[in-house]
Structure formats: structure tokens, C-alpha cells
Image 1 (cartoon, rainbow, N blue to C red):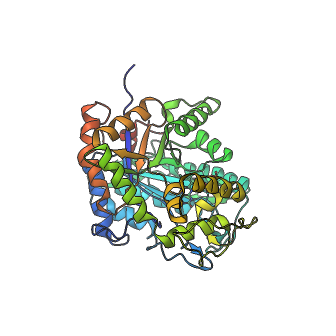
Image 2 (image 1 turned 180 degrees about the vertical axis):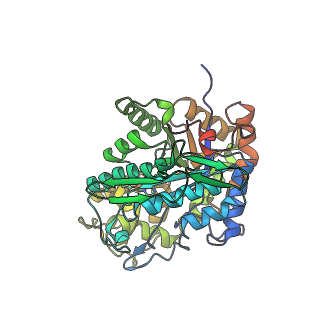
Image 3 (image 1 turned 45 degrees about the vertical axis):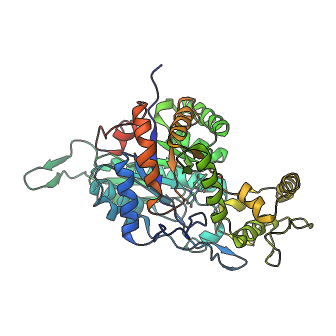
Length: 446
Ligand SMILES: Cc1cc2nc3c(=O)[nH]c(=O)nc-3n(C[C@H](O)[C@H](O)[C@H](O)COP(=O)(O)O)c2cc1C
């Protein structure tokens, strides 16, 4: 059987406490030159796209800004539009939620970005996860999960109607004047349902990709159904071989009922990497990176997210607390995904206690082990072989790489791993097409 081609993307880390700021190479997360430097490295590596997540509210802990999150997150469209000017082939994916926005506005922004980039725009549709974020918006608070996905579904459908409103022979490009000539019906739309009741004319002619490529990132059953019905790519967090294979089989198995095939939905987990000259050197480096990522203060803060109470008087080099976590709604840490992942804090505490006891670990040492996994650690040859194996064995269609240093952290991968993947014949030596749909092997929407 022919080998699968690997897809690669680069995630510019947003609000996070895993970037190693103490490294002399670490730069700004706000200045444009960081974004440009990062995007150009990805394009040099012939990556499919650059990815921006969305963080709409600064995270808090114990009622205060989480001061280990060094930066905020500048506006996605502004950053991507600027990147359009300094890249040529790289896809540009923005995460924009469907809970606090309106379809007309979002469709206009993505159609514009697709024009500006000659067909490189993608939209990661998220529903956003907490009422804390919602407080920033007019809507206030939050929608229950099923309502969020219902709104997401109809939101996306409405934007498709807008993207498609210029379809057909009513639009003629006037090459000489560089303008579009439209007949009387161009852009006309009308949409009415429980969430949106809008009509008018869409102001942006059909864009080079027809519609932006659609990404989805939710992990619940509703999220997976949404992806199976409507997305082109899933950004997942299942980056190990086993978890990846299970997720891959689950989601691809949902496609037939929507009349779709496995090639129409790509699965790309987020993945971190540490590369050394040898496997042993990489392992050492990886441990060092983890120690830099988890300071004593970070360790205590991470523990508070599970214990659900202030633990600032604990010694990070000492043992885990004897008392149990506070069960109930978590108010200690606001705006964090990791809090939701510890659905049963007592069980997490029991697992961690057992691990700490077995390996004689302090709080900090334990947190080094149990928070933020490192996906690919090894020499360039090992990392290339592992990624290839994961993709060929259907644990993923490719990976969205998240370096621990911004903006130069992608370089070792681009310079040392990409050439090996190219030698293996599983990654492009150059871009074959111009649009993101071309890179991802996705058809133009009918
Ligand atoms: C890998 C991954 C990345 C996500 N990235 C974002 C993000 O950047 N911004 C955001 O608001 N939500 C993000 N989400 C949240 C999802 O959109 C969704 O709101 C959340 O996962 C709750 O839905 P679920 O219960 O289906 O997982 C992400 C979720 C996952 C699994």
C-alpha cells in the first residue's frame, strides 16, 4: 500500500505557561516580528499551515491574573492579515468561536482573509469552554454544551450560505479593471432559525477556496459529531499512539452516516518535541525543559487547580498535602482547560499520591511528570521515524507542532527532521499547489 503523506503545522503558542521564557532565545509573543519569524520558519519547512488558538480572557488563579502566563493573545484576524503579507504558500488558521460572534461578521472576515492570502485561510470553529470567558461579552455567561453545539452547527451553516451567496455565473471577473461584475442577485441571502434571523447581501465575492478550510477542536461526543458532519480537519489533543488510534477510528467511523469518506476529515493532534544529537541527549534535554517549564511556583499553582484551594504555604520541594482536594465547582483557576480535564479530583489525587510515593517525588518533581506531556523526544532520526510510524498506523494524519521556545523553537524540527521525512518520501519536498486545500488534499467545496 502507498505510504500516507504526513501533514505538518505549527502552533504559535498563545497564553501559556509552558514557553521557556528563561531561555535567551525566547522572544515576544506580541511583537509582529515574532509571528513573522515563526511563520517563515514553518514555510521554509513546507508546512501546511500556521495555527493560532484563541484566548479571550486572561486566566486567573485565586482571583488574580495568572502571572506565570506572561502574555496575552493579540487579535487573530489582525495577526493573520499581517502574516499574509510575509508568507506565500503557508495556510493561516485562526480559532474563532461561534458562541460570542455573529455569522455575517465572521464570514466577512474569513472570506476577506481568503482573498488576501489567495486561498490560504482556515477557521477553527470552537464553542469556547467557560462562563468566565463569556463574561467578557454582551451575551454574558455561557450556553449549555448542547446549545453551544447547536448554535455552532447553525452558525457554520449560515456562514456557508454567505460564502456560497456569490456562487454561480452571476459573478464575472473583469480582468482588465481588476474588479468583479455582479448581476442583481449576487450575495443575496436570507437565513432564519432559532439563533439567527438575517437577510441581505453578503459584501465579499466568492473567495479562492470557496470557503475557508474548516477545523474543529472539541472532544466531547457532540464535538466529534460536529466534526464528522462539517469539518475538514480536527485539531485534537490525542497525540500518543494508542489514544490517537482510538480517536482516529472513532471519528473516522462517524463519517459514513454523513456520506463522507476518511480522506475528507484529517486528524491532526497537537504535539510537542525535543530534539538532540542522540536519543540520550534529547531525553536529558527534555527533562531540563520540563524543569524549566515547572518552577516551584508553577508546581504549586498546578496542584491548586486540582486541590481547588490556595496552597501557597506549601513547599514545592516537599511532599503532597495529606488533606484531600475540595470537591465541587472549581473557582481557584479560571479560564483553564486543564481544570476541566480533572473531572474527579479525588481520583486524580489518589493516582498522584500513589505515583509520588512509589517514585519518592516532591510536589515539583511530581508536576514535572504529570503535567504537559512531551510527544516526540529523540534524535532527528528517531523523531522522524516515530512520526512516520504514527501516521502510517493511523494514529493521526499529521501533527500540529507546539515548540517550547517562541519564535525560534520550530527551527530544529524544520532543519533536522523535515529533511528526513522528505527522504522517507512521506513529506513534500515543495508545495505542489497554492491553496491550503491543495496542501491538505481537500476538494474545492461543491
Ligand atoms: C485540542 C483543543 C484545542 C482547543 N482550542 C481552543 C481554543 O483555542 N480556544 C477556545 O476557546 N476553545 C478551544 N477549545 C475548546 C473547544 O472549542 C470546546 O469549547 C471545548 O473543548 C468544549 O467542548 P467539548 O466538550 O466538545 O470538548 C479547544 C479544545 C481542544 C480539545
